[in-house]
Image (cartoon, rainbow, N blue to C red; front, side):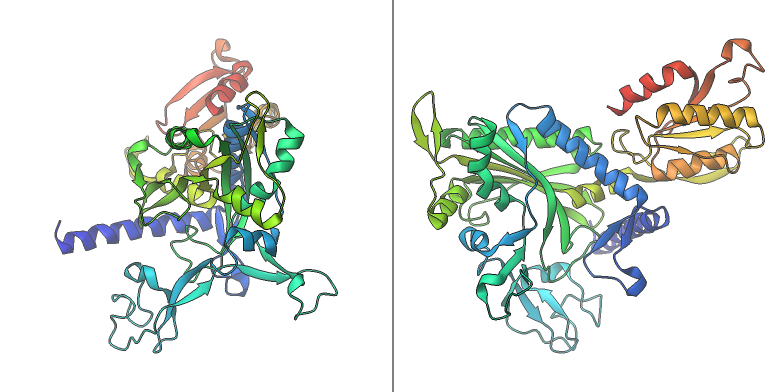
Length: 467
């Protein structure tokens, strides 16, 4: 591929990404945090539809990994983290990225990612390549957010220091013994957690992909040492299957077997699951075999025994850990990128138009079903439509809309990814064909095909599709 072709292709991808970002704001998926005051860089707020999409993802992840398994339990650890926890884990004094400053424009960049950055003064150049660029030598920049705890804490009192957690994993490791003692779990078993983490990124970028405040969906799976490598491969396959089940096809996923020298020093095996974003192939999740490093350092630092006792074999050993760790916000972004499409369609009058549609898997869609009375000035239709809405609403998120032509209402729901639309018309009332009384028109988002379905069958049909 020629350089010009590459530039043209990337320009198309950039334009595609800009359309997704625009839709996310226009339709209430994602907003810039504190936009009213100029924005808070690297932080994002999820609007009404974005909150539903993210909740659907987290609920499904929790159901698949905890509720439908006997060997994984849940945890919800605190965000504020004791400094001794992070000293033992190696984060205090060792959790940093190399940073360089440009003396000309005063911008700061990650020294190991300059190839993906733009010069502030001349965006066509990378940092250091612009005519005025003058970069400093790299230095380490601490990524953790530090705070002080206690109303009477002294700024000079080191005992008052705490941190916003940089990852969810450490609260799992320090509560591992309590979970073992209270839950009667037996190796192999896992502890799962969904929660916020915080990293003071030097260059937040690519929309919500790299943020300073983000959410993780993480499992620490404790096992015998001899099972670690096998379970790492098994978890890789399980996680690939998960992404397929939420609407991200396997052909869009890439597996990076992280080579020696690039893995964390304690890892014997790490896979990165990557997705083809418009801005490049980037990591969604890591599946890492962390050996017994984490429990080992906490056992040593705390002076408390963390060995597991096998009542059958009478062995005592420190479990090894396999960690599937997914980025919740990154997965939401992948769902949006995968679902977004613009297509040319022809209306009933033969006129062509562009249809914007989000092809979410039904279980991920923020709104599951749109409810439409054919005419808003016919009380019988409105009453029947609201009765259908009230029947479905306890079981799923639905949207009632009586404003505008029915075609425009369909398009509005297509744009937010609603998989099904239900129209209540005069046949529903039995005014046309008597055999169609108490049936509705069910429209499918992706094919735009319509069929009649009995109101009494509607709930079971939708629940089966949304499971």
